[in-house]
Length: 172
Image (cartoon, rainbow, N blue to C red; front, top):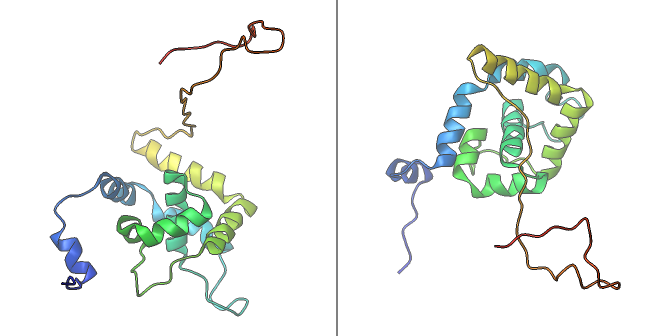
């Protein structure tokens, strides 16, 4: 017997647990100075009907998608996929599935290039850092390194039968 369809809003009300992603996005929604960011980008963002064709996506939606990309290390195609898959990310970006268009990977790419072309990525980072510093929080950019242990042949299996002096090993 097929299940009855449920209205999406009703599904959210019936949900019992707030996920870590939802909690993080709610906190970031409160912490990030969206108004200051939008004011920074607005002079460079295309206006409605400026070149004909489709109207541009809402600026705040695109900025929020850009932040999602950075926080979750998403490529442009993966950002589009994630917006279709994740209710939490769609809500954060202000997208209502069925009512709003979801930006495709090319639109996301073009927005990123617009920010880069006008030097706004550094300005956004500086603006967020200054805002957080006012609240006593420090923000730093970093890199996560994954060191996975793999099985590899012994270093003495080279032509000379000698150990490579630059090679070291470990045990699981």
